[in-house]
Length: 186
Image (cartoon, rainbow, N blue to C red; front, side, top):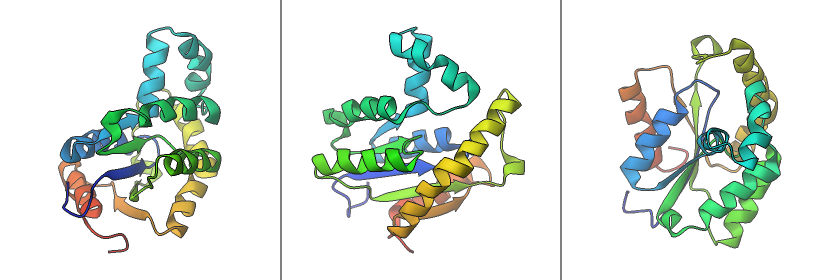
């Protein structure tokens, strides 16, 4: 962690298949902060066949978003843990303007704020489907219609930094680390 941060609270955004998961793990390890991937949390619930997992399985299989209330509730509990005191990286949240509002409220209650939002940019032609193409297309549509307004919200707040994700993973990791360590707007 750089000397200028007492805690580091980050949001990592990008279209499906852009490498967010890999970069999120690297960032969390580099800065020793809590990584929260809402997708991983929900897939774990489905795998363990919990009541929540059974409720969200069909929604996720279609590529749709799980309700803001459900995802916000899961996140609120995680941010209350002492392991997030040093900072956190959110991957997969917020994906809607409603979720961004929930996050603002959660952080305000804790006297915290997002330090920066990292957007991994990748042309759609370079995205890795990773499975069902129809699901990828649905997720891309949701990204365009519901998540890009969140990107613009953070751009307007001066928190957004963009990284070209169309490069080898090791160079991408270097680029991401540079924007986290640099002042916003640099």
